[in-house]
Length: 236
Image 1: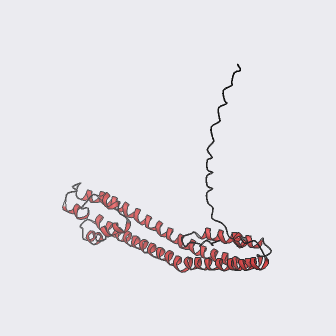
Image 2 (image 1 turned 30 degrees about the vertical axis):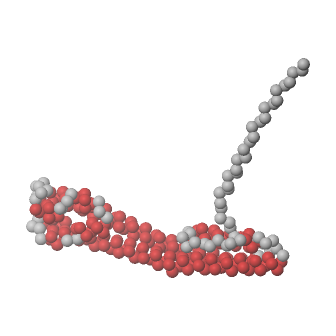
Image 3 (image 1 turned 90 degrees about the vertical axis):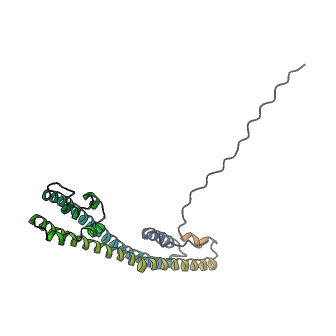
């Protein structure tokens, strides 16, 4: 038997199930139960790494939620600013003051992702601070806060993504390598036991879960057509 290599792309849940099968199978065999503790240790290692993976995943989801919140609030600000600016220019969306901020339709800004949207409105607070209307000055102050909130959310996501990638490289990949090495070592030890105890040649492979494969469809056996009975002969 060629021992299956556990792939780095497999989920840790799948790896844990693989090891649990081997551990349970070893414990059920008098010739092999002394080898079970080493697998039990591996299962504990997997559980520990899985905990770290859950933490990293949750931090990334939290960052995604922060970005969604910042994006929604910035979109709402743009909608309100559009209405307020139109009041100032008396609905003339072709006026230079209006076009200073909205060179295109407001929805073109709103449909952007947070990072791109911030890059488009990043210079607006300074311009709004110089507007004569207090209402526009106030909108500039609120925009400054929203931009800061959005940038913080983007930085939070950057750190969360980096942490997840670091965890995979430093913890998950090295763990999978450890698991494959341990499985190969275990198989070798089982093979030695089988040889010394005169156990069946396939005995070492029984402790590793086989990959499920769909059963091959049974070949259809052609059925020969029934022979027609010979016509009855009539006597003279």
